[in-house]
Length: 388
Image (cartoon, rainbow, N blue to C red):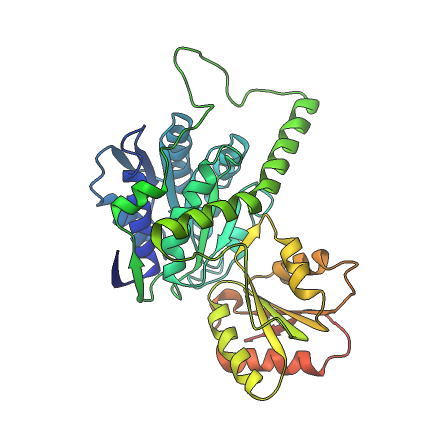
């Protein structure tokens, strides 16, 4: 391994290249590519990667980029792509197909505000609109986590107990374009960590079948139940592959949730993505003032880690949820999930805060304002907007 100063986009592209090359002894790798800010550098990196047995396919739209991945994965290749914002929305039909066909496609999503009006800055609304599409969703805090989680995503997606696509998400520009020190994996490590991709239901010309044909309601019901059960298996399988990652790479990669100074906290702030870095600093400063506060970072949003959330938050008096997204009329999406998870768990005060929506800055001053507001509350209210 080598420590290099690289961006999140570079980290994702590098991991895609290693993962694809690691399947050279099987059916190779395929990446459908179409550019969109701020993810374009990822597919540019992949386009230059010297695959021994792989194909990078430039296409005319994001819809087609995912279509290439569908065809490749159905034929047993290791398949991946990247997108953002309205490009992700444009491929929506095929995003759904990937999950319903149980194809282990990995997609890097560089979170960017959906438009119009057009905005190229960070907002999680693009990936979160797919929260019910049976994709595993992982939200990264740093470029190192992007690099490691991308490799982990392939092993998780291709596990026969799962066989579901995975999104690896990062905040646009904040992570995608900021250079950080990253310990980049070597090809031999990727080879040891990633078994050959085997799609058990791949197309076999010797035994032709119809895929995606008309079904009756009871068959669709059984199909949806299978998807539901596969998602429920993800947390346990994820832990297995995290342990294998540590044995190969000599470092941990964060699991479904990450806690910081929550052991004795009576106030817990829930975050995801890059906001967690700022929140961690605020926790330290307020701990220095004698306040018992901590942080819970949600990395895996789908399937939602409800048990882990309850284990951390049940003893708290107050929970503040910082969302870089907004569901119109309902507030932050993570806040909604936390409220649902905590039903019947002693009812701590749970307050939602809309911070960083549309890419507005979430600086320490903003987070201190959130902490001050929560400290003064005796009851929860409507979601509070910050950064207007």
